[in-house]
Length: 398
Image (cartoon, rainbow, N blue to C red):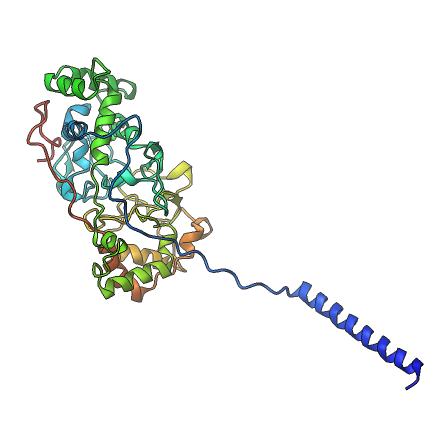
């Protein structure tokens, strides 16, 4: 082969190689190769701590817990002296309530039997009463870290810490204040009433010796200490996660696996099975309300609730519109393709993580069985026989 022919062959090969790479580059630009997307993190669930932390400025003592218990059940805190904290957060219902929307002021009866009195002009409380059980752990993350002074409270996270949360129902018109007092005046009225009761004066002086009189701040601290003590942290799920592998059945473990695979733990994560973040799910409006509840900062989002003690705390969702756990899971299954339950929202507004849920009908029974392993009935149910005001314990619930 002559040198000239050899050069032509080399030149031809180089030209072909360049042409092939150029064509591939052009094809790649028109039809880019997408790398296989990484699967979403399924989230982590784990056991609750055996003990809880208290804020530095409100250390827990047995005496403070018992004072808080008396105040929790005493309707002296309400404007009309007819509603106590326990009216809507009763131990019989896991410190929640068995009705969709609470009836506070001008109501009578307990749970499903509670009704407004005649000639009523008080509205329903606009959201379902969440359980107080385990609120000591609100804000806990997947690694078990939390700060009690910053614990998120309410369906819209509008309060930080139990101490801040306690004062809000007392000041709320439809919950405890009623017509008799302005919001700005009710805390002073509560202080006046408690300072006039010798037993309360004595108890507050012993527990808060730095103050000569009963203060609303210390009222909140005492009730917060009591609420913080209401833990239910030894469910069969907790026992299993702490090492007792016989605590759950095979069927319940199948339900746990389905729960994780469906993506439920991306929001219902950590020891409380809640990330404490607001999410927009498109839950139907409660028809008892004469207005639309727009949720967290007007976004129609509501905080992820805990999944603990669900057997005791029905109905479900922020406004109590879903009665059973099966129907809650069917609601999530229906998010894919079916018309939204809330007609005021568009599918494009729904939370991204909610849309990525893959709850399958065949798994619903098993997931419910798993959720029932999160129940713990061994919580404090003690109700005082009487309260220092002499008023009916728990308010007008009989």
